[in-house]
Length: 189
Image (cartoon, rainbow, N blue to C red; front, side, top):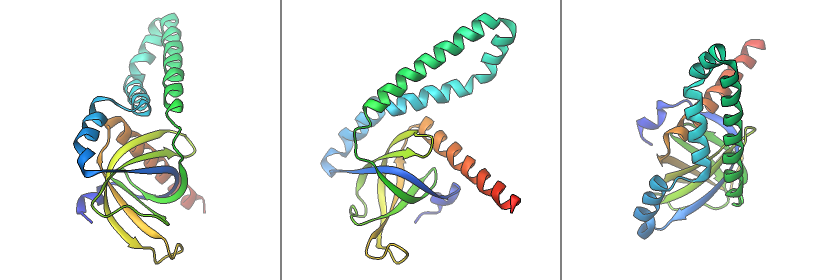
């Protein structure tokens, strides 16, 4: 495992995921498609990321021109509803609920099947309970027989090699919120 993988905070997290291996002969075409034709859930995530970058601007507009602020709010909700429908239509893949070790750089999980170490895969990830969905191109960096609770299964570790910036921001915010929740629970104990 590389040192770079430790730049991000890691959490134990239950998520929904599916994995699709990418054949070596298809990698270039799949990466070109990934970067030029964003998945609908990535489009939604990018839209929400851009909106979050301009919340302060909208608040200034709401104070100066309340009618325009209300109108912009309605437009935001309508666009969000449309992008949600688009991404829900693409959510036909069978996602399996897994307990994972998750960071903004990678994920590891146990399963009775495992891809080959070094392979590239398309990972579809649904964060819980928010339902936010991400599509990531990852490399299988480690496959080993699980020696923990899931004996007989394989522990698979993936490194996120291709991830849209808005999707990484969503992961970082999700993990940070879970970290803050955990710290809050420790302080209350």
